[in-house]
Amino acid sequence: MMAAFSVSPKSYLEGTGREWLQSNGLGGYASSTVCGSNTRAYHGLLVAALNPPMDRWLLLSSLDEEIDGTSLSNHQYPGVIHPQGWRHLLEFRLDPWPRFRYQIGECCIEKTVFLAHQENTVIINYRIKNGKGRMRIVPLLHSRSFHAASPLPGFRQNPMTAGTVIHSATRPDIALCLFTGGQLSDRLEYVPFEAVYYNFEYEEERSRGLGWRENLFAPGRFELELSGDHAFVLAASTDRCSMPDWRSMQKAKRARLRGLVSPVRKLALAADSFLVKRGNGLSILAGYHWFDDWGRDAMISLSGLLLSSGRKNEAREVLRSFAAAMKDGVLPNDLGARSYNTVDASLWFVRAVDAYFDHFSDEPFLDEMWPWLMDIFHRYTGPGDDFGAADDGLIESGPALTWMDARVDGRPVTPRTGKCCEINALWYSSLLCMKRLHRSLKDDSDWPDPGFSQRAKIVKDSYQRFWNSEAGCLFDVIDPMDASIRPNQIIAAGKDDLLPKAMNKEIFEVVTVQLLTPFGLRTLSPRDPRYVGRYEGSPRERDACYHQGTVWPWLIGPYIDALISVRGRSRPALAHGRKLLSPLMNLQAGGIETLPEVFDGDSPHRPGGCISQAWSVAEVLRAWQACQQRIAVRA
Image (tube, rainbow, N blue to C red; front, top):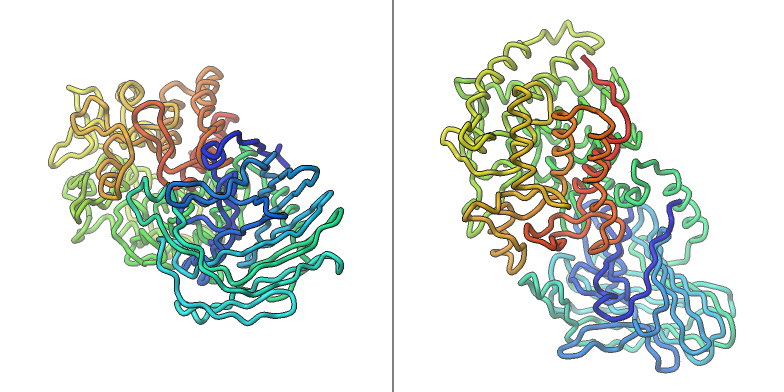
């Protein structure tokens, strides 16, 4: 296993400045800060996925722990941090699950948070040395969607021998079981008392302009008289009401995680966290804490998350899940919501299938996918209300159908209506992919070539209209012309033979000078008067600058592709690629051993958005692998 992350925070702010997350393979998770203080409405020790990977529900928010009046907990209340357990925190480790080590006098307390794989079950393991006095552990609960702080519902409980069963008025279908286990002499006693703890504050939600105060419910407390060394566990679960063989579960999960292969070992756990169960298949969540499984994000992420680590079966199941949800050749933008407002997700799907076949030469699976690929071809070569092929062979699309789809007050911030540079680069690439894949079909008698080469030539010839000779790069959109300097053009410069090498070189230089940062590419040149350098404020303010200068780390992948395309696979070029990736691979802020959704456009490029984003992690993994080895390219 990789070396464990370790930190000893010297202040409350330092302790809340880094966040950890442990997933359960269902979309559920446990997550908080290094010092254990919840700074988001999304934080909690058990956020259960009740309809995997959807319907995520906050149940166990945190635990208030104290020994003879000395608390290990931390909460922000109006005007005060109380208690201040971080003062007793000697070390936080992630190895691979969260481990807290406290010292109170001569008493040493170690707490480990373990989330069972493919269960909505969290197990908190305590080991105490030189304990003295009475230990009390109070579970603090809610029953709400994980998306927002909310008023408390009504609760009722049914105490049992080693704990209690909690039901809420909001979700009477859920039974949350709280129970304990350990050596007989160390078994905790459960004492029901039912109280409300008021005015918890979530500082991160306040800064994001969202609801940031709520109350939590305490059903009772677990108690144990300490004398010497002790070991015991607490569990919270919607799946069981008695203690499982958690040591065997922990051993099995550790073995599974140890077996993960990754181009970058410190990102292996993050990469695995996005792979989730959906029905009888698998899917990829776009990010934690709040995103669902999105078609565009999943298809961009598939190569880095799964193909680069040789996870053939998982990649195949993800492709099947999204193919089955396809509608008239359009991949869903949001798989859970079955929304189809995207022009590019299907094109990324074609490239993902091509990359899968390039890795595994799986002819039966290619035969299985081929009807879906042909549906995409026919959809993109015909007309459509939202997008379709123009007379020149290029794809023209309506507003906010690309990845730059943010809206404010219902109006697109970057509508990009017309013919977008990256959409048509992807269309050209998809045609070449389908041409290659068609030759690999075991039996193509039922699938005659509909003219992939001819269509690709038309697109290539028409694509030259994107060249903006005045700026020395591409128009972001044509018909109508939009000369905004954006990163979308880098996708055209990194693949295939769409543009002459001289043009690719000029595109690369413009993007490097105006858009490249240590953490990815800006979404708009700082020279543009619409540029916004800080991603912050209310949802409205953040959406307004989402693609107006904010840095997206996933774009470092296409940038590395362009670097290799322009400079070749020379040792200096590959070494330069690895150097460019280094700041992302050694990030010292935000989520631990993962990568965030975005960064500020302006220095010092603070991380923002969700703390762990699938395509950020995936594209760094894919690009790092590309910079490590020579990859054979199929003709």
